[in-house]
Amino acid sequence: MTVSEEFQEIMREYDDAVEEVQKNRKRFDGFFGLGHHPGDAACHEIMDGKVKDLCARAAEEADPAEKAALTGEVLRKEKAWNGPAFARLMLCAIQRHTLALIPRLEEGERRELAEWYGASYPRRERLPVQEEVFRALKK
Image (cartoon, rainbow, N blue to C red; front, side):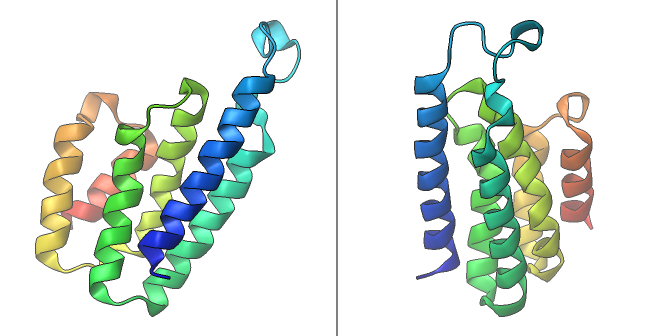
C-alpha cells in the first residue's frame, strides 16, 4: 500500500467517525458549554496521530514521488472537505505534519505547491500553522 493509499484510508476512517459524531449530535451540543462539543470528539486526535506517524514515516522511507503526492493530498484535503464544519479546523491542523516532508521535495514540486497554497490561502486568512507551511514551501 502506498502512503497516498494509507492517507486515503485514514481519511475514510475519519469521515466515518465524523459522520457518526454528527449523527449522534444533539441540537444544542457545545452551546454555552452544554453537552459535548463535536470538536472534542476523540476521532480528531486519533486521525491527527495517524497522519503525523504517516508523514514522519514517509519522510524517511517513501520515494520522492510518494512524498510529493502525500504532501499535496494533506495540504489539499481541507479545501476539498464537504463534511461538517466542526472538522475543518482539524484538517487545517494536520497540514503541520507536512513540515517533515516539505524539505525533502524537489524545488519544482515545492514551487508548484507554494503557488497553489498561496492562492488558496490568502495571507489575511491563514492560520499560524498555515503561515509556517507556506514559509516552508517558499524556501
